[in-house]
Image 1: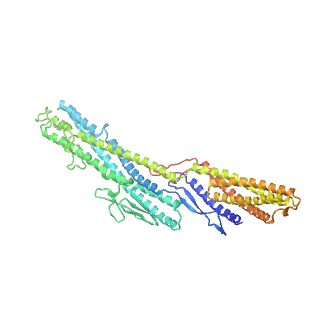
Image 2: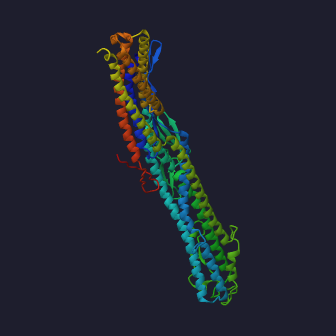
Image 3: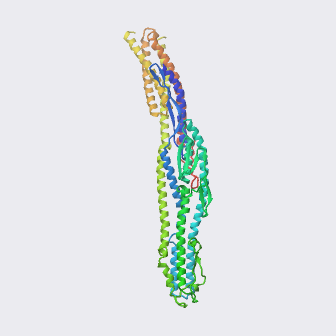
Length: 459
Length: 142
């Protein structure tokens, strides 16, 4: 009767294993909505059998431990897509604030430029008119203000992004410290052959948060995750984290340094930090340079046309716009140099009633600037660039979001907890238990019948 | 009691013993299935137990009926070795059945609690404000 006596022992083991398996279900349900939680399964192993002569009798199951269900490949893809998405979102957030400045609505550079040439056209018909002259000055001032506003918008965005760089670096340092603190716990669990479980889930979630900030390469080791930036700068090795630092560069912008003080700013290309740096150091300076060039060349062209004519007093026309010699900063500082309408050089021969030089001033509208295009076309090109950048970044953000959604679905199908599935299984178990309970009662009754087998005829 | 009747009764008694042992084995399989959360195996085992119980009840009645009709003392009518095994196996099954009942009671209670947990999960999420704050919580009633 080896099978019966061992069955009695099996019951005790089964009770323990069952408790463990149900504990896993309980944990899965309780964490169904916990971000980053990986579904766990109980690892049950058949107990060593008892040999009775040639017969091997099973000894039930024992609970070996728990294991989280993970797909490392999908997890890595999610990290990479998160980096791309955060980078795109960081750029998009800035571009969406810049875009309204570069439109063809009222008070933008293009509109004010057209208004200035319209006012010059009106002045041409009546060069001695004070009000027409004043209208030209006002239009010129409005155009200068539009340049100033556009420049301010760009530099304000740049300043905001510069602050964001510092915040991102601080956040990165905080997260890498947390990841490093979890590594010893994971290493201990791995050393005893156990699954990282919830500690690993926490770390994965932190790595994902880090991926949202910067490009991260993860290497699994016995001592936990080793993290480096995209260019190989170590962030976490074992229980040690390496902090990034910031320093003010020669351009006044915050530069990122690794733990050895080496500059790594330009190598950070993805994540919020990468997107922020990309916009701060590439996109905005590019737009600012074009804006400054336009302001400088347009102002110079108007000033040159002024110099070709004479004002109402018969003197050679003086500069209409104040512009710096250097291109940089022209949009920010351009202003109207003259305050008296009679100072506008309308005359080509020095007589007060002449309008001969207005044609030269008007020609600025249709002549190509040194950059190669007319002022209107140059501005239109700038508007197109901002729109195109915004549109491309929106598309990239949308694409990575869709990709992330798909990857998360994929991960959920592997690691996620399905409440419906767990619930259905539980109800099936309950029904089976009820049926089993009826059998227990029958077996109890059967025992009485078995004992009675000998007593009926013995009476 | 004639010789054929005695032979038949002994055959039934032996078969009864085998069925008892099979029942013990099935109970053991069911406990393993519960421990492993192996629902199909558990359901299959319970169905077999039901079948075995029905079969055993029928056999017990047949044997008892034979005893009633017998003119000889009962205990001498069954092979003593078989009878001893039947009694021993029955005793072991009784003990096994008690463990099985305890296991079912314990697991049934746990299952009931978990079902309650599932039922109360309404998927209510609370998302914190802010671009990177994605703490989600859900509540349930027990």
